[in-house]
Amino acid sequence: QVQLVESGGGLVQAGGSLRLSCAASGSIFKINNMGWYRQAPGKQRELVADITTGTSTNYADSVKGRFTISRDNAKNTMYLQMNSLKPEDTAVYYCRLIVTTLNLVTYMYWGQGTQVTVSS
Image (tube, rainbow, N blue to C red):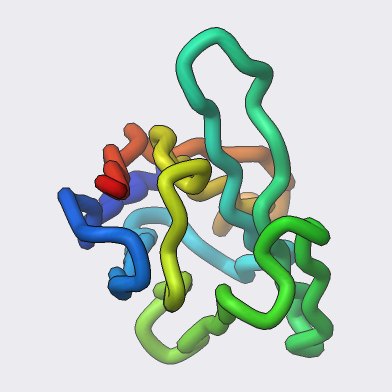
C-alpha cells in the first residue's frame, strides 16, 4: 500500500503564490511519473504539470511561466510552486503518482485533493 498526503492549498489574492506538496509513503520501490491535476467546479479534471524520473517536465499552456513542478526523490515528495495566481486557477488540486511497489507491480495513485482559491 502507498499513501499520498497533499498539503499547501489555501486562499490567496490574485498575483499571490502558493506551494503545494505531495508526500508518498509505504511500500515504494520506485516512483515513476508524477503529476498535478486540477478540477474546477463544473469542469473536467485537467493536467496542470507532470515530471518524469529524469526530471523532464510538461505544463499546461495556461500555467506555463507561472507554475513550476519539482520532485525530491530522497523524500518521495513532489512540489508545485504556483506564482502569479489568477482567479481562474481556483480548483481542487490533485497529485497523481505512478508507483512501482516493493512487489514490483506498478499502480497509479491519487492524492485526496487540496483546495486552492484565488480571489480577485
